[in-house]
Length: 94
Image (cartoon, rainbow, N blue to C red; front, side):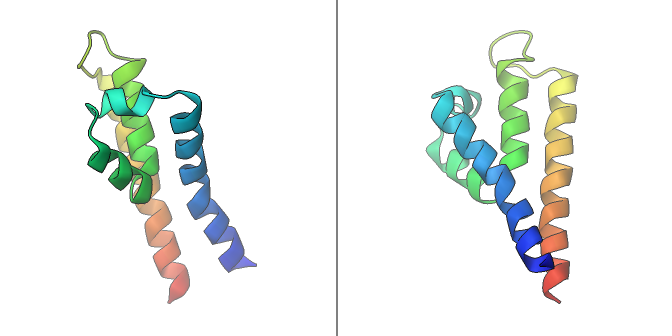
C-alpha cells in the first residue's frame, strides 16, 4: 500500500502540470520563453517548480518578463516540495 501511495503522490504534480498545459495553452510556454526543452524537463523532473515559476511570471509579474519576490518564494516552495517527493520516493526503495 505504501508503494502505491508514493507512486500516486509522485504522479499528482504531473497530472496538474498536464491539466494546466492542456486547459491554458501557452501559459507555461510564455513563462519559459517558448523553450520546449525546459517544458519537457520541467514536466519530467520538477513539475511543481515549473508551475510555480509559470504562475510567478504570468500572474504575479509587475511587468512582462519580470518576477516579483513572491513569485520567487512560490518557485522555491515548489522546488522544495519536488525535492522532498524525490527523496521520499528514493528512501522508500531502500
